[in-house]
Image 1 (cartoon, rainbow, N blue to C red):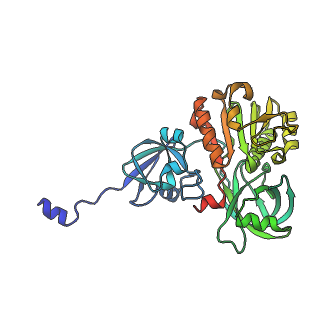
Image 2: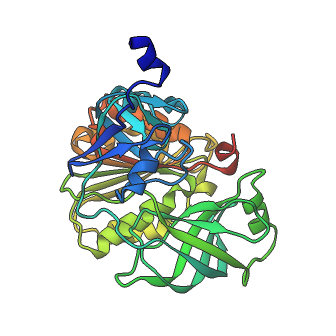
Image 3: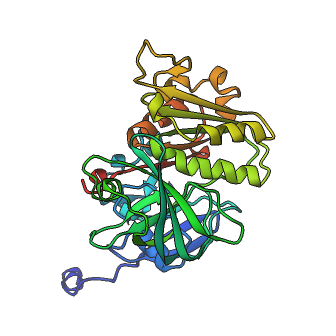
Length: 356
C-alpha cells in the first residue's frame, strides 16, 4: 500500500507559511517563490530595490524557522548582521514555516511610487569628481529624506539610483538635486561628465529605499563618505525643519581637502541646530606637509565617546557610502555595543558592483 501511495505522488504538501512581526500578518509562500516576492504579492509594505541581493534594502530578521539562500547572504550582509539572524528576503526560499521581524515605525515612508518625466536644469561641480545635478520634473514628487530615485536615460539598458540631496517639501516638489560621483568606467557618469547636459530629458522612478530617520530621542551618529553626503544632508536638513532636538555628530570621510564639500551647509546646520551638532571631517590621504589641522585616518578610527561627544552605545547610527566603509563601520559599531536594530545604512554600489 505504501508503494502504491508513493507511486501516485503521495499527499500534496501544504505550502509553507511566513508570519511577519510585529504586525502578525501571515501568508502562504508557494514553492520556489522568494519571501520578498510573495510578501509584495500579499500587499506587505516591504522595503526593497534591486531584488538580486546586492542593495540590502530587503534586510529583515529571521526570528524562527529556516530559509535557503539563493545567493550567499554574506555577499551583502556583514558578519554582525548574520550573527543576529538577518536575512535578505529577495534571496530567501522557505525550508520551514518562518517568523520574521520587519521594522515598524510611524515615520515609515508611505508615498506613492510613480514614474516621472524630467529635465536637467543645472549642474555644479562640488569637487573634482562629484557633481550636483538639479532637475525639474513634470509633476511634484513626495519622498522621505534619505531615500533615492531610479534615473533612466534613453539609450542605456538599465537605470541608475541616486539619493535625493535636498530636504523634501511638505506637499511634494518638482525641483530636485542629486550628487553624482564620476565613476571610472561608468556609462552614466561618463555621459553626464563629458559635456554640458542642461536641457537633457530623463525618466525618474521613485521613491525607493529604507534609509530614513527613525523616531527616537537617541543621539544621532552620522557617518558618510564621498557622495554619501547627499542622503544625510537631506535627512539633517529635514530634521532641522521639523525641529528635531537630538545631539548629532557627523563623521565625514574623504581622501584629501579637495574632496570635502557642502561645508557651508554643514556650518549652517551647526549654527541652527537646537542641540549640539558636530561635523567632523576625516582625511585619509591628505599630504603630511599640508595646512590641514583636522582629523587624519579613517572614519572608523574616531568612533569613540571622546570624539563623538556622547556615548556611542546609546546612539542611533546612520551610515552612507561605499560597501567597504559600511562593513568596517558595522564591525566598529558592534564593538561599541550599538544594537543592530539601531544601525541604518545605505551602501552605494556603482555599476561595476551591481553587474558583478
